Image (cartoon, rainbow over all chains, first blue to last red; front, side, top):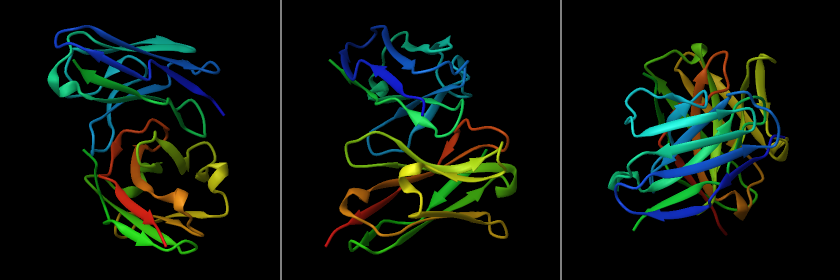
Length: 107
Length: 119
């Protein structure tokens, strides 16, 4: 199984800050990576697919980069509504696996 | 756009079974791939199984083999996930999620169904 290691596990930042979350795959997954946002009490929502492609309707302050084994999600200017847990997920092969999640808190 | 509406919360005794449904609208079930993911309270996301395009059939995560059955009723565009021999550790929110037919990239999610296993 492909292991996905996310860091940090949590962070606290101020409104307007630039925030970066990283995700490392245990083997090469090309760009077969999703980033999800999960607001407390809600289902996950896809932000980025193909490692760097913004899902329709997602604000442009979100961006993804990386290929192979190392990936990142960046929020260019943190907003109050970005309070959530963020997960990476590989879909290179089965079983589908997720990172452990990053809790983003607003200072 | 695909919309997924799941059945409601369930409470079961240890050893019992539960069947969660997921009604698809906006797309035919035959044109998408269905997957199931669960989330224990305060924990991360765990894939349980789903359609494998390369195999042309549903594949289950090893830890659920023998206990889970995923089925589809194409006449009503409804998918089902049944988990048997329930134990307290199976208490979780169960999500259905879809991917494009020939892809594993999860895209649309149901609202989730809380299953509580308690004596």
